Amino acid sequence: MRSVIVAAFVAFAVSLFGTPLAIKGFTRLKAGQPIRTDGPQAHLAKKGTPTMGGVVFILATIIAYVVGHLILLTLPDSPGRPRGYTLTGVVLLGLLFFMGLVGFLDDYLKVRRRNSGGLNKRGKVIGQLIVGAVFGYLAIYFPSDVKPFTTVGSHFMSFVRDMPYLDLTKIGAVVLFTFVIIATSNGVNLTDGLDGLATGASIMVLTAYAVIAFWQYRHWCGDPGTSVYCYEVRDPLEIALIAGAAAGACFGFLWWNASPARIFMGDTGALGLGGLIGGLALTTKTILLLPVIGLLFVIITMSVIIQIISFKTTGRRVFRMAPLQHHFELAGWTEVNIVIRFWIIAGIGVAIGLGLFYADFLRVVG
Image 1 (cartoon, rainbow, N blue to C red):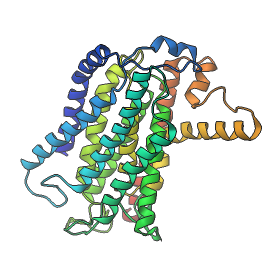
Image 2: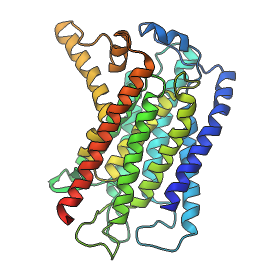
Image 3: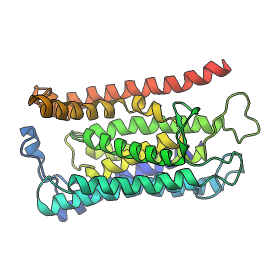
């Protein structure tokens, strides 16, 4: 637990004090966020606000991960406690970094061209496919060399744990892995439209996965002292450390990203966070629990899907504008009200998700 707490605080401090440096640097480089002309007119006042702020909390998470491992080296050996860097860490941080890199290319093109176009849809999806497939392969095809001989991911569908009767095969598991990563990265990206909205929601989701992973570490099947109910998850403490570090990093970034935002995370941060959140669901083997914990991301993504289907089939729009947060802006809600109310929805999803996770534990041991 000590390493997780230290990593979270280190990430928070690096992000909190590093973001002002990024604001100055991106301002000098004129890396301002282009604003859609067809969006809410209030957003035009945000033109020129530095973007690509996700670079800060991605680096903060990686730095905190290294510090967390240094703390682990000072502690006595224990079952499930990694003594060095693990494949689980490579997969999760790889998703965070390389999905962030895809987003960085998108942000860079937006800034360079001075419009909100960025990467075309095909280019962005190809980048996400490559990242998802590469790390999906690493997660599914390389088992641990210590008991339990688990892989980072699983070829079974999962809810709060693996469901052995739903075997996807390894190829199917890589496909699912890739799909989940693309879905979550786009879900967070669509949510990132108002000051602090995606950052605050991501903090809640990441904290939830830190709690889940640490609980799995305390009830890990590789621990001889574990009885009755245990989790066959690879490197659960590693997962908790990374989730905690990312939550801390986002928390520090929120200081500067809250309304009125002095910097935006951009696609760099949104795609990176989405990739990491999807990876956390896959590594903790809670795939079907992800839509509950990430309830806000699901609602906002569905608003876009509904809008597209309705317009293409009937020529009419269900919402004044999609994603959903912009519909409420055009309806007259203030930005702060929308953000706070959507945070409440995100918190409800997280609370229900954690409740379902713990309820399954009580069902067996209670």
